[in-house]
Image (cartoon, rainbow, N blue to C red; front, top):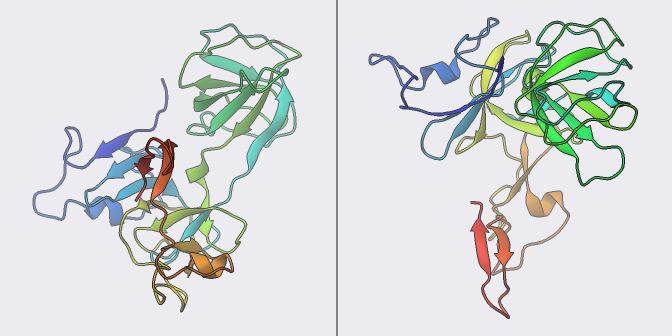
Length: 267
């Protein structure tokens, strides 16, 4: 396997840290050179419920730790019918020639391919891309998968959509329609820089004036610019006096009126 993403818990074997500097120093470093220890999309859990992911700035604008940053990539290659067949168990597949940019070897690593059987949604599967062959624009290329095919691919019937690594082109927040990735751990200059994003855990994000001001409105939503707004304000609603807007989780089984409910907490 040429490429894979991993989740590392700080202190595990293999993650050596300085005994004279802070254990988390590496998370606040920004560089135009990729750290060879990390792949884009790797995650580190650093205690206190915090989780960070390694990413790359798109290179258009500076990013700020006090504002959310956003994903920019759309599909690399739109749905395309396979021109070759592949058997269950294969770990390399050929994407047929169609409209796409030129790519260098392994440029799509960490991205995803969605494979459709061409007849229904039942056998649709998603695989991470661990590498790819180089290809000129619009020509066929090979991608390598993070796991064997569960079902055969049929030439002329099966189809695929290809996506780049979503963390390989992060930009500053400016569009309410674009999903936010989290907050940079440090200031990132307007250059193609590698850095860490805080995707889970406690931090400070630039708030709008209504955030936290009412009784139960503790839920927050992203705004276009990476600041946060109270959920009730964002959705144009109000929070009843005894309720709150924080998402607690979801019902797994049952109801208040019957057995249960069993709740999967997501605090």
